[in-house]
Amino acid sequence: MKASGKIVVTLSGDPARQVRRLVEDEAFASPSAVMEEALRFWLQSRSRWIGRKRWAAAYITRTFAPVEAPEAPETPIIGEPSERVELMFDAGDAKA
Image 1 (spheres, rainbow, N blue to C red):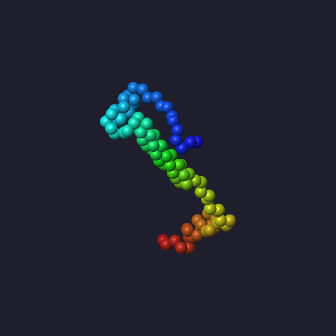
Image 2: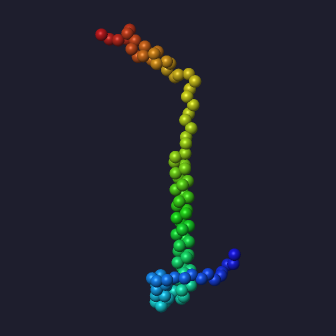
């Protein structure tokens, strides 16, 4: 693609009047300069929006990524539940 070229854009109504007013007020040298500035601004805004969208997608992916649960030990740490009950309520240790 060429570094520069001619592209024809047709504006009607209010946008066309605003472009002519900017040139008449000497804010821009020509209608082409107005369109170049508008396009440059739009491309920069779009680039920032896409960047934020990509960042958000990566953040969500990292935040909600599945986490592997640790493997359960092969042998219980304290023993079977019935043994635990007996240890907690041994009649010999009870005070009357």
